[in-house]
Image 1: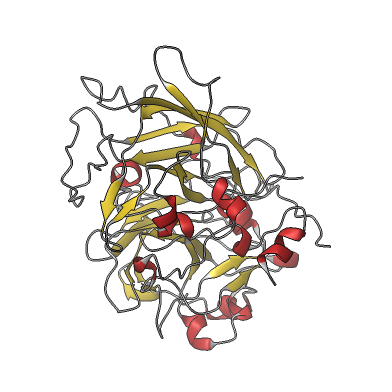
Image 2: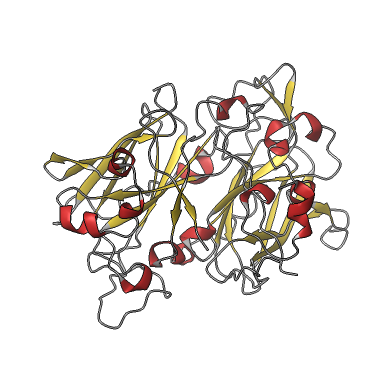
Length: 191
Length: 240
């Protein structure tokens, strides 16, 4: 019989020395010609900022290729200097921030393209397991409308919680609400 | 469906109720305002979650897995070796994958500035380490046994001794943060974080086992903690 997975437990209040001592929030240098900043705050169900969360992102490069041997299309370039992984704490009043680039489109179920998006995990004291969400991009109306994951969310307001806002000058903003009327859409993995 | 009926289904199930704790577990007070309450959206399997961090390429220092040798002197406490194997849901080793750990010192105190427990800090112990799994998925840390500590969750609340572990595995899907406990801890029954894992067998998978083979004579006790991740290779068996 296959082994059963080890259960998740909360990250607790004190992961900083082990997980956040090294700054991994810049996936590209801020002076990279295509650099964008993605920022936001994590809020709890009372609308209070969560200052002890850890936000992680995972994304494809500009060409739409993930830096993983599992994703090895011959026709898409791999940029070894771009890992696609980032991690940010929220110690400053619940605020997280990443400097990265906008990913290209990657294939979805049945080869149907997905709109450009970034995978997000949030860990925190009080979260016994991570929450998983996605960041989608504004100004991608057509692609977002066709996206198989976004379009599977029936409630338009819930769908909107995944689409970042353009703040100008290369800054995108998306707040995460863990709970409440304006709760962010969170995912569970289908088999 | 009853717990017993769930367990009656042999084989691998990706059923959170039998594996992971729920988001909302009111006995753990911090979940009350942080647990999402809207139904989760099913995320179909795509490259976005079957790929994952190639963190293993980052340089790991030779002593990063020895928390007793990060300072001029040795930390106080009971020196221990923690080792085990990381596998996926099919029992295959998770190779060359980053494992990060953190813990309180032997007195039950974290180095973090917000830890107000009036127990002594140890100038020779930071309580953070990391290593990569080897080709068979094995990892090994040398550290000191963490102390239990009080917290404010409920009246006279104490956390059982534990080590936090963070693992990436082979895919975004397989990412796991968990806690490893020690066998026979008398504090399990009153700890809502441990008890939030409701299935008894699943609880047991959070408890390390004392291992005489890992124990080094006249030097350190050994504990074994194997970890199973969900991941791209997991092929769930059919339900019956």
